[in-house]
Amino acid sequence: MPDPTPAKLVIRNIGLILSGDINAPILDGDCLIATNGKITAWGAEADLDCENATTTVNANGSTLAPGLIDSHIHPVVGDYTPRQQQLHWIDSTLHGGVTTLISAGEVHMPGRPKDVVGLKAMAIAAQRWYENFRPSGMKVHAGAPVIEHGMVEQDFKDLADAGVTLLGEVGLGTVKDGKTAKQMVDWARKYGIQSTIHTGGPSIPGSGLIDADMVLETGTDIIGHINGGHTALPDDQITCICESCSAGLEIVHNGNERAALLTLNTARELGCLDRVILGTDGPAGSGVQPLGIMRMVAMLSSLGNLPAEQAFCLATGNTTTQRSLDTGMIKQGLCADFVLMDQAQHAPGKTLLESVELGNLPGVGMTIIDGQVTSGRSRNTPPAGRLPEIV
Image (cartoon, rainbow, N blue to C red; front, side, top):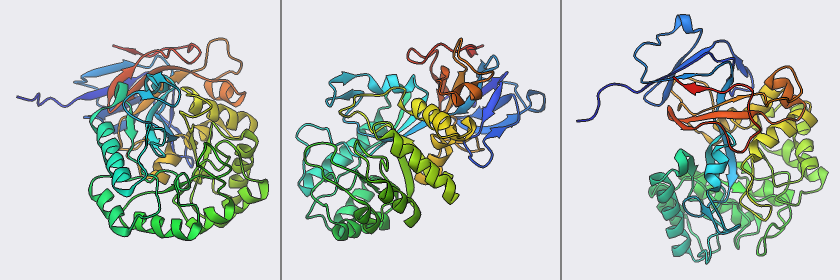
């Protein structure tokens, strides 16, 4: 018989709680409780019911934040990528504090089918295999078909009925005109499938330039790598996109850093920092970046003059809102997905936040997904000053 005892996680002695909410990025409290994988309460330990915990973590003064989210990856199958002939890249990404990955298309699958029947079959299969298998506990939202000529409305209904919720980057397939792309994006949206568009110059042979005119005409939900993947659009086109739509503005590690800062500054001037989200766009020609999201947080905070507590929101709560996720914020009822981290040993700055604002990476001490500890001290970040431990 299944154990009727609720799984109760108590994290105590927290030094700082980051909320993921860009409007209120820091929460009061030194303790958090999750039951059966969902956040139930946080605050002062003396005010909370910490009895009957099935798992207790002593944070030892480290910082608790929602698990980071990579809004733009290109997985293939399991924890392997043929793009760089690399195994266990997802596990390495977990050690960078990321607990959720979102596919922008499984485009590096050798022999990727481009006929309608084949592309639908591969998307459904990809959605299923990551639904059934979490590499190292990581949540991977995959099964993101690249639209091709010949698709009709029924194809999008079929995909949605089978559980597909994402489109791969518009523009990586044969559909490269705004009118056709818009019709297909509208069909996808009708059936609850979220869309992303490639932005900028070609990334791989077969892709092409997607400029501001096509981005705006297509009207996707997310502006994929607005800072280029790899090559960015001219400055005036980037600012035009920011000003002319309300879609999510995705900045990626594998893009142009100067264009990333332009996007950040433009969004801030427009009063819409909540639209900015982060991805890596890996695995790709640039390789795999296990610390890519953390590096983007530090880069945008230090060079973009963005308070570190807000910079972390770009990789958590902003993506939660833009992509309608059930994780990424400290909020009752959301998934208990966390990263515990601290200022890296001997790093400048008086606190973790000051250190990040100076461009330094924090040290990851633990990740937790659905209330279960999934990794301990990171093998990839610099060593943290304080480490959490399971009591």
